[in-house]
Image (cartoon, rainbow, N blue to C red):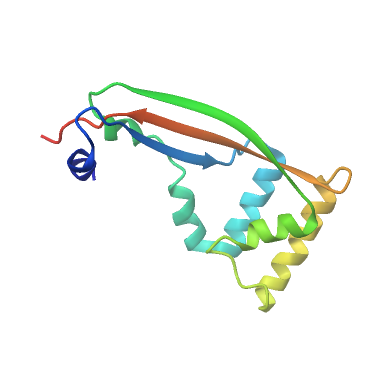
Length: 136
């Protein structure tokens, strides 16, 4: 992967790698994560592994890179929360029995965490900027 980036980058070019991560310290994100794991099974576990950023520094190897973190919150109504969760590829289709059960559980989550008709879903955006080291 690094070799391909070096091939297409201009001599002074940089790479920006960006992730929106879900902070598991937030009770709603933790509850959503548990629901996604329950209904998404192995597919969701594979997607969750993509959130592991511990190997990103190896992409830049010995080169310096910058890391930035930003937080933001998405305000969702009941339908928005349901759509957010069911939009994940690991989740069952809404029209199936399992999908309908997921919708019911999401509705209960909404009732538990909503204030003034909305839930606040926090995210952390992590960006890495730098030039990958030459593959040796």
